[in-house]
Image 1 (cartoon, rainbow, N blue to C red):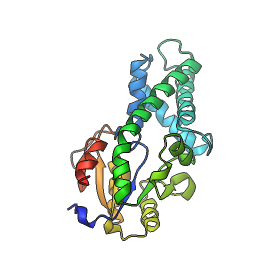
Image 2: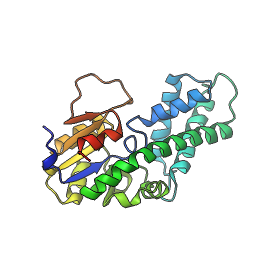
Image 3: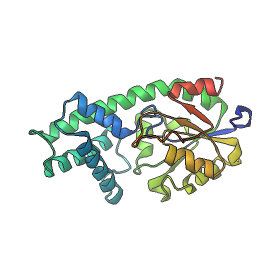
Image 4: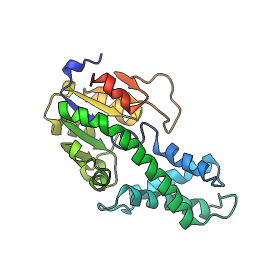
Amino acid sequence: MFDIQQIKGIIFDYGGTIDSNGMHWAEVIWKAYEEMQIPVSKADFREAYVHGERTLGKTRLVLPHHTFHDMLEIKIRLQGNWLAENKKFRSVVDIDSFTQEIAARCYQYAHQSIDATIPVLDQLKERYPMILVSNFYGNIEAVLEDFGLSSYFRTIVESAVVGVRKPDPEIFALGVQAMELPAENIVVIGDSHDKDIVPATLVGCATIWLKSLGWTPYTGEEKADVIIEDFKELAQVFRL
């Protein structure tokens, strides 16, 4: 049972929560593919997306100074090259133009999503210490600076820096440790049920699930202390 009176601190996920209003970034990127009428199936796109993420996990292509737009271009180019090399495009695609246009559309989407979160973050910051716990590539500080979000979070626990990735509960345990509060006085807010809600529950935190389009269909058995479908609903949850 979620008790607002018990909450003394907030741990936020970043990607998919603050920057896309709960929508998995694969879905955001696919939407841009559809808008540009990229000649590829969604199944092939998903393979390209996985290839890109695995490549970034193995190879340090994203550097600490890279902004979110820089990172998008790296990710989209990896996808485009894989699709071209594996002859998945149904017609000729110029990879440079494809990369620039998809990245620009996705960056704009992120900006719009973040602009919508800021009024809520402003109010939450006045009441609660906030920490970020994120699976990211080592450049989260540059991304936050680019979007004007650096001042909102007391500490950042970034997977590429601490060497632990969600869904390992240890990364949330590090967030709890950094907050210097008992876990039962902390609420975790994230978009991924498997990577945010489940491990946060295991370390004893309350949870708020921002539920939107995920990577896989939901079973209907997912649980969280609070479920919302829009970031702005946090204003009601916290009675701002």
